[in-house]
Length: 124
Image (tube, rainbow, N blue to C red; front, side, top):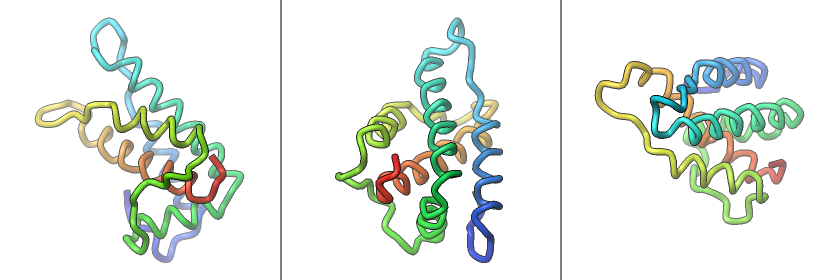
């Protein structure tokens, strides 16, 4: 994910949608975490839908990406954002020679920051 300095929220939203789209959801018959990955993908889609309606969330996300705010989770986050963040934390991250590593890790990082932004704005 690129930084958001000098970009508008529309560009950031476009980039987030691309990351979400490229997050592969494997078949349950051959991947042990398929259900967890599918849940995270659904959380990403939900978070994007909310962020679309609440530009303040995208503005806060841009500050998180830039490192201008601490990316720590908000203990006061709304229940749905908090539950999505727990699901994301419980998903093992691939390493090494995974064929979709360049798509998966940026998408999961983006989702993590988006959930933090949703939680801090009280939207999610």
